[in-house]
Length: 571
Image: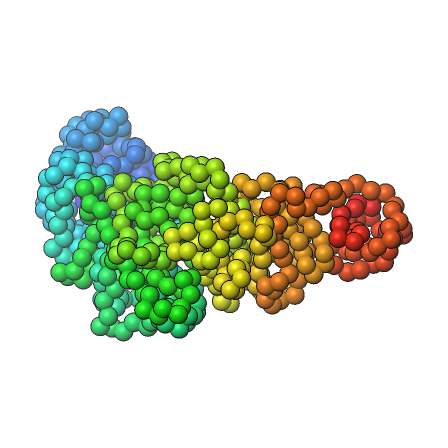
C-alpha cells in the first residue's frame, strides 16, 4: 500500500502501530482525535502530510513518524502558532493552517481562545466531556461567530459527573444557529435545574423515553399554607426563563436537549462586566399564612460554571435538594462555604423590599472549591453562636438542622435569618428539624437563648439505629435529652446512638444550651465496674433491665438515678 491518503472517521479509536510500514502518503485525523495509540505512524517512510482537526493542541506527539523533518503538519488556523512553539510538534518541517477550514468541531479537552485566537469562519461546536468536566474560556474583543453551539452535562446516580463550563470575557460572541444544552439524567429521579437561557418546553428532545417538567409555585404555598404539592406541570407552549428553577425527570436514563429560544435571553457568553439577576415574587398575598410559607421562589445558578455562593447579592438563607443524600439542605450564604454547581436550582425567600437576586460575574469559578470568602456573620458577631445537629442512618443517609443563638433575633420565624424545613418524600434519609411554639419546622433556627431549650423533631424513614451528633458547635456545652429514655448526652463531647421505629417524632428530643444545664455524669461515657444502684438500668435503645448491673454482659449501659443519667461500661 503506497501513496494512499487515509481519512480517519470521527470517533474511531486508533490502535498502536496500526499503520506501521504501510507507506501511506497522507493521513487526516478527525476533530474527536485527542487520544490515540502510540507510534501509530511508525516507519511510514512515504508520509508527507498529517492533518489534525482536533480543536485543541494535542499534549504530546505520540504518533512517532520517523521523518518529521519531511512532513507538513496541517492544523486549525488558530492553533498554528501553538503547534509551532510546542516542544514536540515544532520538529515538523512545516506547520500550516488547514484549508478549507474546519466547519464542525467536537471538543473533548479544555479550550482557551486568547485575545485574537479565533476559530475561522462560522463553525458549529459541540463540547462532549468524557471523564471530567471541560472548560471553554474566551477573552479579547475580536469577534467569534458560531453556527450551532452545544454544551453537555451528565449525571450518574444523582451526582454531577461532568459538565461544560463556559467563562467568557469576550463581548462579541454570536450564534447564528442554535445554542443547545445536552443533559444526561437517570430515570425516575427528579433533577433540580436552572438554565442560563430561555427555552420552550415543546423544543425539548430526548434520545430515548419520555420526560416530565414542573416549576415551583410559591404563591400556592403561601395561599394554602402548605409545604408540599406546590408544583405546576408545564405544557409544550410554556417557556422557562433564564435563571428560573425547574424540576425535570425522564422515564429512563437518556440524553435530553434543551434548545435556547431564538430571540430570547441567553446569558451563556456574558462577561465579567455583567451581573445576572432573577426577579423574585413577593408571594405574600395571604396575610394569615405563616412567615415560613411566605415569599418562596425557585431560582438558580444563571452562569455556565460553578458559582461561589458568598458572591450572591442576597443575604438570606437558601435551600437546595441534595441528590446524593436524598434530602433538602439549608445554606446560609454568609455562614457556609458553598459552590453552586452548573445548572443547580435553589429555593429562596423574598424578604420585604427585595425584588430580585443578583449573581455578579465575580462568583464564577471552574471548580467547586471555595477559596474566596466574605467572612461569616458569626465571626463578625461573637455573640452569634452556631450549632449544627446531624442525624445519620447508616453511612449514606444524613440530614442536619441548625440552631443559631442570637439575642438580636426573635423567637418567631424571620425571613432573612431563618430557613423553613423542606421535607423529602419517599426517601431513605431521616429528616431533622427544630420546632418553635407554633409548630413551625426549621432547617435554620436563629433565636435568642430564651429559656435555653429547643425541641427537635425527626421523621424516621425506617426502623433501625440512628446517631445524633454535633457537626459544628460554637455554643459549647449542649445537652441532648432523649425524652423517651431519659438519657442525656453532652454533644460537645459525644454523639448519641439510639433505636427508633419508622414514623414522626416531634417530642422525643430536646436541646439544652444555656449555662448550668447538664451536670456530673452527663458529659460522656464513664468507666465502671459492677455497680449496684437504687434506680434503673437501661440498654442504649431504652430497654429497662432492672436495678443493678450485676450479671450483665460486657457492653455499654445507661443508669438513671432520679433526674440524673450516666453511661457505664461493663468490661
